[in-house]
Length: 404
Image (cartoon, rainbow, N blue to C red; front, side):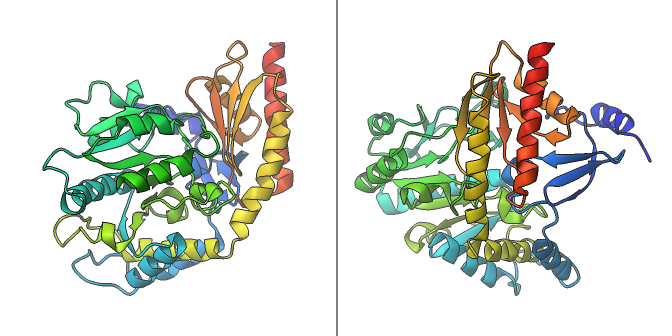
């Protein structure tokens, strides 16, 4: 078998350097654990950025994928297929919305929401042609397509990819007043992450989402919630917006919707919003394909039990309680909700990448962001003992870094 070092060398020489992976080559995975090509096991505490909420190879999801693989994988949307209706109805029921529009990746779902909001603005709200604007947040992360990076405040994602798509107004995250001041007669939507994942698992102030909802309702503006990372059980609720009882006009979903098996994304909205889309105006050959729909149906059925939301709540209490014990011991701040945490490492001690590498040596996979922050988001199927063991490895890693 080719070694990890050899595979990494080939990868680095033959692929574009659009990521900076940690030096591990994964060969196999089950549940919350992965195994590298040399046979070493690691506890996965990243979950594919919340794509693997149900763990690696969840039996129900794999069974659904295997059964569908043997029957039908693709028709294009030129024809109906027998999984499409069940997926759309199921996701509509889960979100409480009339209609869904399936796509593939999270970025596609965000692009879809932007297109729908603009079209709704022109045809329903009555905004003048080509004058629509959408309010977005500083430190957002919605993907890396050309339109999306046009309103990114991350230099790596944004710089040197212009000219940029106009029509976006950037305001500070967590301030409803900043949104209110940015609104004008041509504002068609507010696009917000209920929790900003890439920014370091930033949780907004209590009541923020409620204020955004009220502001949008009063102003005839669509509230678009990007729940790609925060949704589908991760925070202990089906959606992070549920914490404040807020229902957006458009849900943007992805990642865990594909169960870690295939890319599946979608937006969900009521008929008065999604009804503005007509044949030929938006689509994708693979969007809503039979395999994706079969996997999505399995995911929806798992969420409908409520088991994973309850488990994320319970394990999240353990996660955050034990992390709080590290404050002042190499950790300066902890944020998050449910089974999701952003951990700020004291900059004088180490960078987030140095801590991630130290955790890798101890058999735990985490990833850094924003310099000194690491994110913890283990699969919801992780056992409590394994979760505690993983946090103990962080404790040991911080202690060792202090002693170096």
